[in-house]
Image 1 (cartoon, rainbow, N blue to C red):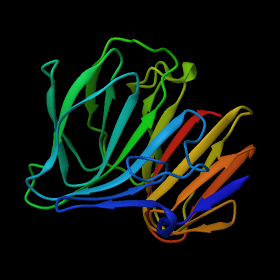
Image 2: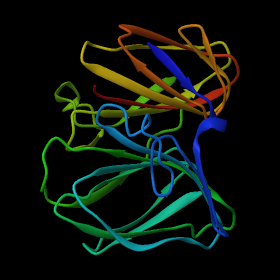
Image 3: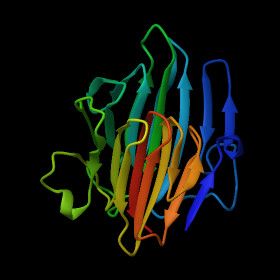
Image 4: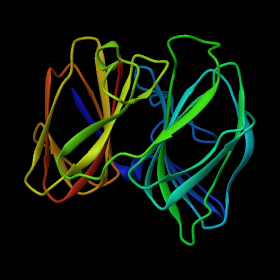
Amino acid sequence: MIEPRPFASLGAFRNEWLNARHHFSFGGYRDANRMGFGRLRVWNDDEIAAGTGFDPHPHKDMEIVTYVREGAITHRDNLGNEGRTEAGDVQVMHAGTGIIHAEYNREPGPTRLFQIWIIPDEMGVRPGWSARRFPASGDGLTLMASGRPEDADRGALPLHANAAVLAGRLAAGETARLTVPRGRAVYLVPAVGEITVNGIAVNPRDGVAIHDEAEVAILARSAAELVVVDVAA
């Protein structure tokens, strides 16, 4: 089953520094039919104004992945971690037993990112943070973060969840193919570009929920940037 979720149907929040869309129930947005997707709990599409950001706040027992689409985000936490993640790269935070962190846009222009929360397989793990630069390419999807057993030696940032985050760019006319084993589910969003998913048209920043589809063909109708999350259903 392939279920497109148009951008216009997403939850929304806006104040003087944050313009956010929510693919799943979050904050003041509540939809009983969008409480998550398998182990995927949150996918927020955030635009953060220059010189602003999220002040220190706590999390617990969640794997939080940030994919930066434009600009950069600067992370700081109570464990002493600090780093800047640029467009096209990812950072992973293991909230575990508890972490307090801040995320700021120190750039001259807005930063746009996807923040993705995945429910861990094990609660109460040691909290932590890591980030990695990935080489820019236009040749399909790159594995960026994973806790799937089969990905142990593939150089991805680790997750405490049987899940994976992939991202990449497709040229117009290029196709990426995914295999979705039984018991798995995939959620994907084109950050940029128009695509089709097994022939179904999808517009920029729409969500696509996929399950019970053994094979998925993603065709770029125009140059596209994709983020894909694979989770236990």
